[in-house]
Length: 165
Image 1 (cartoon, rainbow, N blue to C red):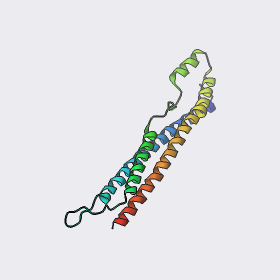
Image 2: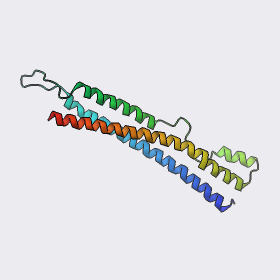
Image 3: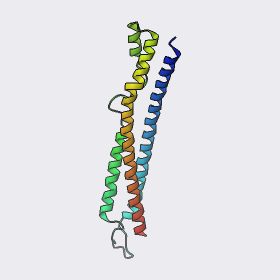
Image 4: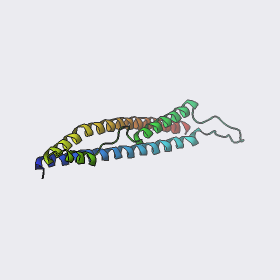
């Protein structure tokens, strides 16, 4: 049985990695929500941008300027790309707990149980946590940019609605 302090360190490292995995899932869920909202916002722009018809059936001037329609479409495409980057699997494999083959390999090398638990705890709270954290930071920043672009899209939408009234 390993020293209780080493066991506590190992369990704490496991919890940190599990928290990172949960955070990655939360970021991905938020990114998907941003994508859905921006698609809906862009879809709401369509009726505003359609040609209006005068009473005699002739086409009247469009309700929105052409540049705003292109800007909204560009923002939609950029947010779509950002969300796809957030939802895509990390380039380097996501690092959770220790792979079983490492434990078996160290057992075959006659590593003591205390040393094994200590080494695994250090590896999980050091290298694995750092690698995962870089991935989380990147995706978090991409999400922030997506949300900022969503806000710009909504401001454009509200401006166009106010202008169309």
